[in-house]
Image (cartoon, rainbow, N blue to C red; front, side, top):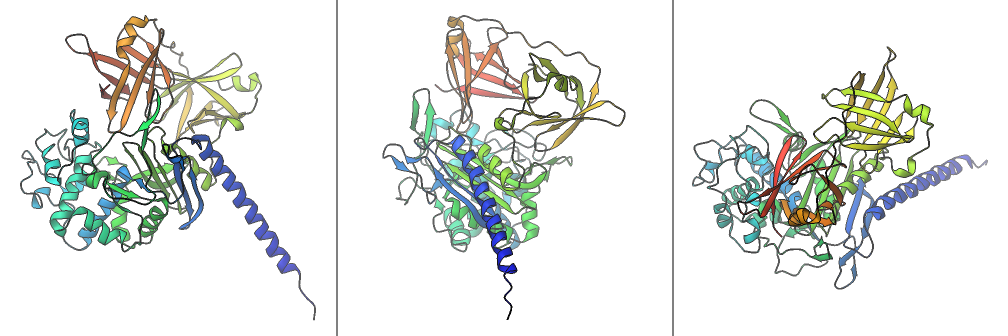
Amino acid sequence: MKTNHTLPLLLFTFLFILNIKAQDLTQQFDAIVTQNYNADAPGATILVAKDGKAIYRKAIGKASLELDVDMIPENVFMLASITKQFTAVAILMLEEQGKLKLNDPITKFIPEYPTQGKTITVHQLLNHTSGIKSYTDNANFLQFARMDKTLDELIDTFKNDPLDFEPGEAFKYNNSGYILLGKIIEVISKDTYENFIEKHIFEPLNMQQSSYGNNRELVKNRVRPYEQNDNGYVNASYLSMTLPQAAGSLTSTIDDMLKWQNALVNNTLIKATSLDKAINGSNLNNGEHIAYGYGLGEMNLKGSKGYSHSGGIFGTSTDGIYLIKEDVYVIGLSNCSCNDIGAVTRNLAAVAIGKPFPTMSDVVNIPEDKMKQWVGAYEFEDGAVRHIFLKDNKLYSMRESETNTIFEIFPLSENRYMFEGSGIEYKFSNSENGKHEAIFITNTESRGKKVNKLMPEEKKAVTLTNAVLKPYIGKYELGPNFHVQISVDGSQIFAQATGQGQFEIYAEDETTFFAKVAAIKVKFNKDTSGKVESFTIFQAGQENVARKVE
């Protein structure tokens, strides 16, 4: 009998190729993680899954700096605002059971809540359009962050605050709304939020390492949370876990989070029609679409659609991404608010779907005459005008704005250029009528046509003395667990936001400064005595005030 050796040989070759590809993917993942986390500093656990199964599982850094304990994949972290998707699914479970309707007014369940004559619905709590002021934005939040409060006592801290806007008229991320959702779950279930999540989500999904956060109970493999200041790493500020509640109180591991994501995809807890409400955004009263749905937000990564949510709480940074068509899930949990893990998960997801973001190692040399062909002004579909110009054999981009910030763009090929460290690119081409066009690539693409327009001058800075700059030194709170540290060195002043690198800001006058790394303007505010009390930051058409806390 003749033996056929061809089939085993082909099978061996196929398996060998698959193994090589898997090794290459792991190397790419490792390169991203190690670029962002140090083995001797606070770290992270990260999982990448494809078709519901982990293809990369990594722990890096220290779970405890004091005890010099290395991170392991089984470490337990606070989830922070990733908690919101659990709360939203709990509400959708109750809806499927006929125990509430999303358009029910919240006073149906909390009749004593003062809605100031307005109708506020469960739906508006879920998608952050209620207008209720977020309690974490209150000036005194840090003062009671260490205090234990019952759920009703917590609600008392914000229930009488004036509304930020008419319900349904705008979107503003709001932790108070999810606290009220936790209350509604308790009213309907006649049980605590903690017990409801445990009984109806964690136990059915066998999420044995997940729980409601508690500062007193012993939790195996729980990490220590850290923050960073000018002197290095410090233990995170204490936060009573009675305060985040249904907006941010849960803890988990990367393995349990994969069980959770698989349950969403497989409709284990809620129907596909219910999940669609959570992941496909929602609408304001006027019909305007917003990306936030229920506990999850729409995302687009390199043309791939999905949904995601991040979290930040004292000493913690978390982020989860799911790409629908590719069935790719990435979850990252970090025990330091000093590093934005969202940038890491985003890069890992891009590699997992075969659309990696370019890095400086991909930059090539292009002759000056080849770069010069793209010089000029381009007007894009969103109305933005960007100027491309050549200086000292380097190509630069300036977007017309208040700051006219200039960035160098680096060649990946003759017609493709990248911004360093951002994942943003230009792709230039010749149109049918012979005019140059530019595609500005972020998570989506915007097409720009070449126009005849002179480039505005770069904003000029003035030099201020150290004596003028020193009063601005300090820590400013821009949001819950998000701060900006202002430092001064001689006649230079610098800003560093939580989880981001330090950058210089330049004086326009004695109180107004601008950045060159981004289109940002900062104006310091003083009280009647001349003491600096806050700054106002102007960015992307929005104004936000950061209070000086240290």
